[in-house]
Amino acid sequence: MFLRTVPENLTVKPDRPRNFGSCRGRFRGPHEPTTYLATAAGHLPYFGAASQWCPSCIGPAAETSMADTIFGKIIAGQIPCHKVYEDDRVLAFLDINPLTRGHTLVIPKEPAETLDKLSDDSAAALGRVLPRICRAVIAATGVSQYNVLENNGAGAHQAVLHVHFHIIPKPNADEGLGIVWPPRSLDPKDASLLVKSIMDALQKTP
Image: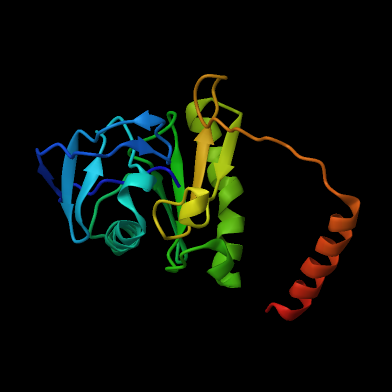
């Protein structure tokens, strides 16, 4: 996930950071945060309410801390959110740094960092409710095209280490999620090896 929810109880330090250099995350080229936010992981760079956290600048230690202090506290009710749905296993709320109007986060209450670590019960609960929330977002925004995004691992742009799905309305070519997708050709020999390896792993994986 590129986006971070910013808890209201964090204090803002006015100092500007130095020597941030060129970012390898979502931000392209040199940039500086507008403030530091004081957290248990230290003072983290924040790029303003209309912007986003930078996973490359923040680093893995901060990601873990932010997952614990933000999503965990939102689930526990210790940090407020704009809740749109809740049941015994799932919570959904508006992203406070939306890419477009109606951008919604859907998370399991189970504290799994990545999708492969999520239990079958929580996965089934997410699968049951995701289409329903998508239909609700479409009805509320009037936008029928959208992306559902779920990232796993910092190298795959996951910025909060707690499973979460983005529902991102795509009203036009300029707004919403932008994707660069350089396709490659599938080698037939490698495809056969992959099919066998994945099927074997499915037999062994609970």
